[in-house]
Amino acid sequence: MFSPNMLKTFQSCPQKYWFKYIKKISTPQKASFFEKGKKIHALANYYLKGFDISKLEATLADEEMKIWKLLKNNEYFKKSYVASEYDLLCKIDKYWIGGRIDAVVKDDKSFYILDYKTGTIPKNPEYDFQTIVYLLCLKYKFLSNCDCLNFVYVDLKNNENCLIPFSDEKFEQYEKLIIDTCAEINKYQPLEDIEHSKACEYCEYRKICN
Image 1 (cartoon, helix red, strand yellow):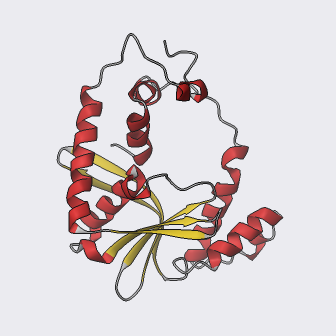
Image 2: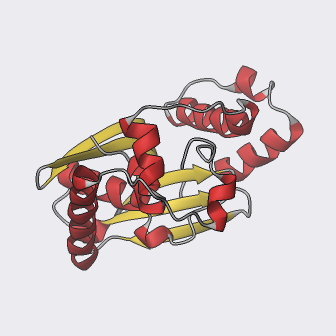
């Protein structure tokens, strides 16, 4: 199965994909880097499912509470609950893609896939693989009509929403992009001589990438 992170990694650097997902070489990461996001995601999941979260809210630091209040008051987060922390999987051509969505909500006209961001949203959100994979999976699993499905990046850093409507045209574009990228991944062979760029200086695999 190809996840959004796998596809994005290959898009940015096939050699990095080789190290991370084929050779399965892991690199240490600071747990604190993800702690705030994990807290907000967990709290949102419990809240949407109707659990009493008062004790969990009391453990939030000031900055975390500020972010949590922004999310609770978000116009899309207030819509009718469908699912949260939900695993999706579908087959495009001969390739399986999938991942876990933060939440799906709806109103009278549309469904919305929500993705909460305590950091930055993608630079090109309409064609980010997270957007593509989740929209395709939800469409295949539940919906025949693309026009009633949307993706929303909830930008908690800037208190903004980035709404991406789905359509039949995007459906065709997204399918082709998935098929072409997965085909490239399957035929990729690691390079012996690599031409490094400035971005390589910040890669966690730079010391083993010749």
